[in-house]
Length: 102
Image (cartoon, rainbow, N blue to C red):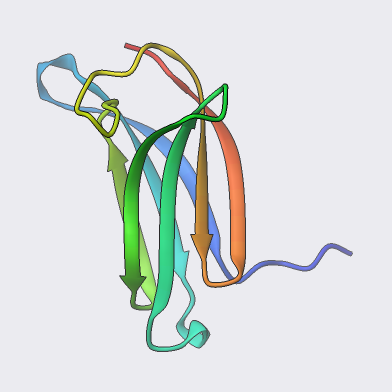
């Protein structure tokens, strides 16, 4: 039987005004994790180049939502394609593929 991680992370697609697309990534920090957990959430293109850092700060236990507006770290709109998001929260690490379409 596979152990269940106390951390959860998943993505969902959201539509905003003016038909702009963004990607939302939901994650949970469990209550037993302690008072604060360092969280790093980054987006990479399929070549492994960093496109954006969404979060790089400690978080208290609870449920969170991070939004990526489809822009890279320089504010330039990203092209449509496959991207990887990686979240590191304490000792929990997860990376998942996502598709970004304009």
